[in-house]
Image (cartoon, rainbow, N blue to C red):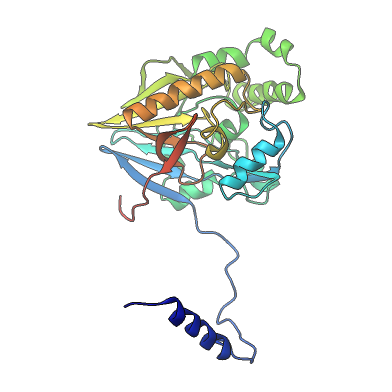
Length: 329
């Protein structure tokens, strides 16, 4: 049908002359919902099933120092370009549960039950969303930790202080374990944030878990089809993973980047949470060049949910292309 501009204008005029809404008061048939649906998403990598489980999202005012080497106006411009509101940041959290066919493996555990209560449900949702996905924490065989920041490790304990995954082996990067248990490194901690991390990590692992962890090394399979990959900079022992099954592969980047609209698009930007920002940038560029060259799917802990896609080169940076959503597994 040929719809000319004249016809379109005439139709608009007719609509204006005959309002669609009546003047009487309208009543909804039911009150609006006040809760979001449980957040989980499943996809396959070969024969392995990946379950992305949301731990929620944290929104906070954008600090001048959020990006150490970019001005706040530049960060706001990047947010605006991505159709995100200025002057605030929203960071997402997405732990994984991987069913390899032989093992049920959790990768990182979210902010934990304390954060769930403190934020009134904004973060700390991992345990509830995992249960909603039909996954029983008692059936988890292995919990793989990428690094020792609170949004990755605080879900290791339940609200009553007992292990959240009572039958699982807890595996941690050997370099990360050594660093946070080094008294000399703790004595060097200058900022309140770093001092707090040393204290909270020691309380969690040494008191809460009674040091019942298994350190793992880079360059080896730490679970069936799951290779531990050195990706330091964010922390001294920061680890990513490659999940392989058949001819399919998935790069699980952990915190190689934070929000992609900022740090995928601008790989030279330094995040305030990176312990060695220059090393983190070197790692980021190396990883993303590999992802582009291999066209490998990537799962990002801080990507907007369901937090996975593909990367392409875009000028001096990169662009994340979200993977298509599928109604079937």
